[in-house]
Each structure stands twice: as structure tokens, then as C-alpha cells.
Image 1 (spheres, rainbow over the protein chains, first blue to last red):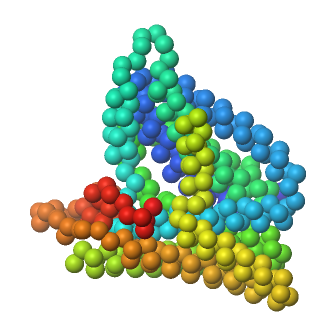
Image 2 (image 1 turned 120 degrees about the horizontal axis):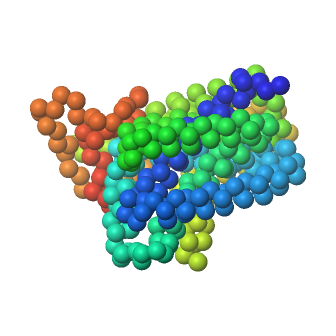
Image 3 (image 1 turned 90 degrees about the vertical axis):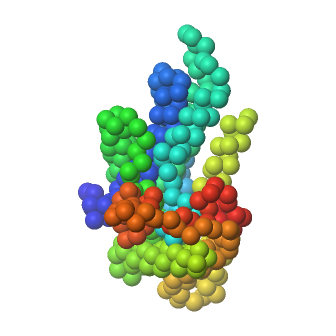
Amino acid sequence: MLMWSAAAPAVGAAFLASTVEVVEAFTIVLAAAAMRGWRPALFGAASGLATLAGAVLLFGRLIDRVPIHALQLLIGILLLLFGMGWLRKAALRAGGVIPLHDEDTIFAKEAVRLGERGPRLKGSLDLVAAITACKAVMLEGLEVVFIVIAVGAGRGLLLPASLGALAACAVVLMIGALVRRPLSRVPENTLKFAVGVMLSAFGVFWLGEGLGIAWPGGDLMLLVSAALFLGAGLIGAALARETNVEIVA
Amino acid sequence: MRFLRELAAELLGMFVGDGRLAMGILAIVAAAELTRDAGLPPYVAGGVLLLGSPLLLLENVRRSAAQSRKPLQAPRRSASSANPSTTMSVAGLEMGSGGPPGPHSSGRRTKAVR
């Protein structure tokens, strides 16, 4: 039987990370649809999703054949690289060292880029829009797939993690369908910060298990690790902000 | 072909956004493995991972912030604006549109922060 105390961190991480990624993909698909029409944008998005589904089926079967300790070690390293990368950027953004991710700006830039590609031919599928949408869905979707596999594969939690990601897709697409504009009010940096903390904590945990460390307290060590990363991220953001203020002054 | 190149670059960028951080993480993993191979108790390797990774992050953020040197402008805020931020904020993580402009707000980026 599924223990929700064990599954909740995986589902939460998959949900929050997928929210960020789906918001980013939605912005690009929306720009493609607004500038070149919904038909090619949706065709491109569907093509991207189909390619991703194929990759998940292929790699899902391969994962079953990898010994659990090797899998935990590999996923642990990749999670640390990925999670700490997100946390680093989120801390630097919070400190004002690099600009915040702005969906309105990205939408405007993408719309200008698509507008410069010339008029589309009537009756034919607009490949520019289709490829743009396909690429956005594939690239952002790949990150979602990685996160779902990374937080779910080590403990047989692939299904709950996938449900978390699907729920995020449903929520973002429903809101997107209602407002029909870039979702710029989503607190993206806060989400990325939280996801960075969770993925980094999972990374340390899996790495330890892969190295044969029996963590005292078992899954509770995830919380300790998350607390340490949260502290490091917040102190890092404060230090970055301080440096930024010193430079401005 | 360009599409595949971009895909490969994006995949690499997913894991190696900052070379120094990536190298540091690999060094910590190697150190943890070495303590295990040296016959030290497993909690030593656990301690290396548990404490080394957050400390590495802290050092990397501090260094990146210090290295981002660029001509800057002082923040300009309207005195009439009672609530300059239009972005939701949790623990100060979102600076909002009314916050002070960061050193990269004009679009240029330094090598220090990617």
C-alpha cells in the first residue's frame, strides 16, 4: 500500500516543478497561436507531447533493468546538479543579481520573433509556429519527465509523481484557457526556489542510499536535508542582495 | 539539425548551468565515495553530502554575486507609490517590478552569472 507520508514530497516536488515548466511552455505556445494561428500551435504542441510520451515509454522500460543502487547514485548526482542549479539561480534572482523570469517579456519577444518570419501561406500548415510550439513543449516537458523519474523511480513512486505532474498541467492549462494571456502572476522564482530545495534534498538522499548509507531516521532525513538547503538558499539570497546593494550604493 | 543542436544544448544546460557548481558537486560526491572506500564509518560520507552540498551552494551564490560587476543605476521609485511591488512575494524571493534593478536588468550579462 502506498504510504502518503513517503509519496507526498515526491508528488509535491513533481507538482511544483511541473507548474513552472508548463507555465513556460504555455507562454511560447500562446505566442505561436496568437501570431500564427491556433491550428499549427496546437499541432506542434501535440507533436511535442507525443515525442515525450515515446521517450517516457522507452526510458521507463530501460529504468526497470538498472540495478537500484546504480539508479539511485545516477539520479542522485543528476538531481543535485539540476536542483542546486535551480536553487542557485533562484537565490541570485531573489538577490537581484540576475533578472526575474518575466513571462510577459518572453511572450512579447517570441511574438516579435514569430512576426518577423513572414506571412503564412493560406491552407498550408505553418511550420514556423508548429516547430516553435513543438520545441517549447519538448524542452520544458523533458525537464518535467526528468523530475518525475528522478523523484519517483528510486522508491517506486513513479505513478504518484506522474499524477502530481499531470495535475500541474491540468491546473495551468485550465487557468491559461480562462485568462488567455501569459501567466505572469505566478510567483515563479518562489516556486523554483522551493523546487530547488526539494530536488537538492532528494539528490543528497538518493546519493547517500546509492552509496550504501543507512540514513538515521530514514525518510525523515529528507526534511533535515531540505532544511539545510533552504537555509543555505535564504542566506545566499541575503548575501547576494547585500552585495547588490553595496554595488548600487 | 539546428533543432537537435538546441535540444542537446538545452539538455546539457539542464544539469550544467554553472561549470564551477557542477564541478563542486562532482567533487563532493567523489569525496563521499573516497571516505567510504577509506573504510570510514558511513555517517562520514553522509555528513560530507549533507553539509558539503549546502555549503557549496552558499559559496557559489556568494561568489557569483560578488563577480557580477557592471555599471549600475540607483533604484528609482515613485514616492506616490504605496505598494511598488506587483508580484506576489514569499520570504522576499520575488523582488517584484518595483524593486531595485539588478545589475543585469539592462539585458547584458556577465560571464560570472549565467
